[in-house]
Amino acid sequence: MRIGELAQASGTTTKTLRYYEQAGLLPAPERTITGYRDYEPATLQRLNFIRRGQAAGLTLAQIREVLHVRDAGGAPCHHVRELLDSRVHQLDRQIAHLQALRETVTELRDAAAEPDPGACDPTAVCRYL
Amino acid sequence: MRIGELAQASGTTTKTLRYYEQAGLLPAPERTITGYRDYEPATLQRLNFIRRGQAAGLTLAQIREVLHVRDAGGAPCHHVRELLDSRVHQLDRQIAHLQALRETVTELRDAAAEPDPGACDPTAVCRYL
DNA sequence: CTTGACCTTCCAGTGCGGTGGAAGGTCAAG
DNA sequence: CTTGACCTTCCACCGCACTGGAAGGTCAAG
Image (tube, rainbow over all chains, first blue to last red):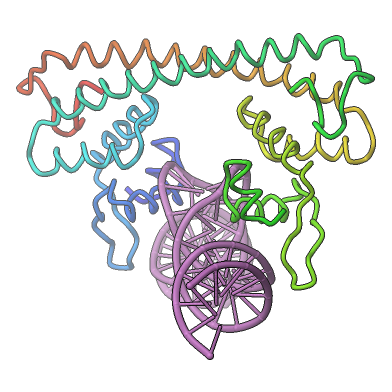
């Protein structure tokens, strides 16, 4: 299949597919006599995998590592589990951080809800922040 | 005060201070005869405000707007309240999104905790993601 | 034979908040 | 007078995941 076809089938763009190739996420496909990329249908599975990885918040670099393990003939299960595990911990930290921030910002906003411009010191810019 | 002094007093770098000036967050300071930047001490308050804004997750562009309101002689209380309010809503959305993602990723990780490489289809790369 | 959709490569830019480094001027201490 | 810390401008680069556009080749339909 040609690149436009694959792009449509996978819900992405030709630009992105060429970028993935250059970034080592997709292997360089066969070419037609005239130089057009000619993808195997299985590439669609690979792109779906990439999308699932992205949906889980993995970086393309992490996804690429998994793909390379698979391409080298290995079973990346263990590697994937580790990635997911560290991702869960990262999410826990992010969530905790955002929740604490939400507390702080909410307090600031409530304090600013009934402003008293007269009490402000212009050199401090705004006492509500 | 010179730029290095201000950088140390504010806990940032000379690079960042010049960047803030170029970005419109700091006004161009006086210069000594030899061209050195000569900051007023009040600039420290301004930098503290910028840091508080950043700590609340505001972008430099948003902080700049507040500063410009203040520089124009206005009281930015109302503007600040709106910013903080929209920031709270944004945080709510981010937290909800990350929590849902955490659920999904946790499930994936648990499924991958006892892997069965034999059941995998290499063309799908990894069935645990 | 032309039109228009598709493909190719290559280079450059996006947003965000800086950071790095080169080439050169200034200042205080010794 | 020299040394070393500090300052100046300017231009370029970081990560991340693309995106835009120019200049040109290919293909099928009409």
